Image (cartoon, rainbow over all chains, first blue to last red; front, side, top):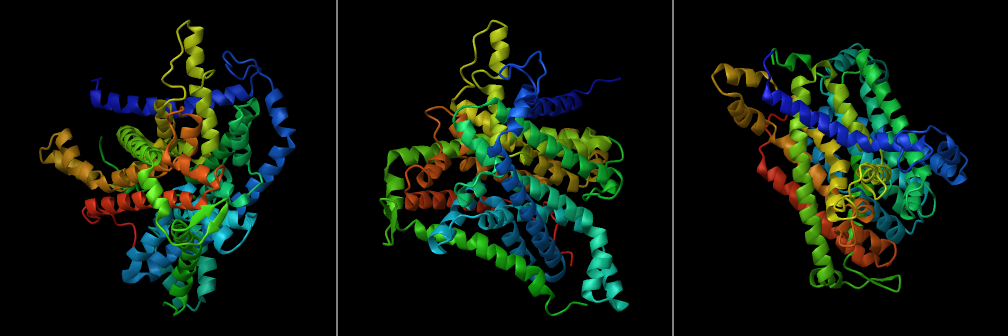
Length: 273
Length: 286
């Protein structure tokens, strides 16, 4: 076999990048199950840190709050992004680029600016105190654009003539949506929901400015981080990482079984590399 | 068959939502930036005082310049790493391509705080790297603890996944048969890359660059926990105006400056490229 320097270099870069990304994750993973959390090599297994994390009531409240923010933000973001994607593809016409620019603009505004500007608007101009509802809504703005892009990759190949056919045969628009469109596009919506949930769940900067003293998991971690990393934080990060892996694994299984394609187009692959 | 109300529902609801909760807050930040804060109270006089402070006080100018340099360097490094990674995955990933890219997205989805905790576990004074060096009997590396280098490593770590994903998506949409066509007509692999692959994926590359540059510019956490005493960045200073110092109006002015720089970057990017030349077909198929 001939050695290809280009291929070797590319694959080496890929491997090193994975190492760089996952070394810290694996390190804190080991640390959260080890007796010596500063330098867990070789690991001496112990569940002390985990039990301390789960017996801490601050983290329990924070987890509940983060779950509420994550679920409601993801539901709203997915619904709005679904509407927006269909609107862009079907009803925007010549103004499509204007709406597209508006819809993806939140991608290009840093999270901390979204948080601060929402704080100013709510606190100063509307006179509202920070609460869960405003935190959820502000998170939706941020997740909306990501959800839009995910749904768009799915709907890009959707054949709208199916809808027209259903309506020609007398189905109402609502019935067409629930019996034709939704069964075909739900994988995209689910993907958007999962990603939006993970993002809103883990968000610090938007939630932080709008919640005041209400703790979320990231803000509790941030507070603890200021006084030096405690082993509980390693355990917390590991738990969240595991859940993220689990959810993305679910997405992957759905994809492998052919339920979801995420815009994968085999006909565009190169015939020979 | 299009109802008269359909555009109002499908485009109207999201637009109203975004105008109300995204555009109006940004405008209110702009309004606040021309007011004043005294003793935690906001005084509604119109003046450009805050901007004068930002322009004349050396510290803020230093922070801004430092942030710009940091964001440019980090985005450049990210793009330089992300290109070979994304290209390698598309060429040699085979059927595991999607899995490999998803694996890159995992760290991006885990929140910033938790990833900074992970990085401290790697780079910190008692972290993995220095632990290994100490147990080998070597001196710990000072460069990677609480310096600007550490901040930069942290920011690359935080935003590399998004750059890889964007460039990968751009390569996925790119018709690889064009390369075959170019090589059949006698182009060398390098020439085919420079004349076909690179220009056709420039859009994705620039978007990836921008999506890394903008959050880096207003980074608040990484410089605080990884950077040293000389590592204060603009975003971190801005966050302090809303927390410890309570000078909201000045903070709002800093926010406006950051926003303006981001807008300038996006405008520059959209001027640089011709969407149709890059083969962008994402929307508007009707």
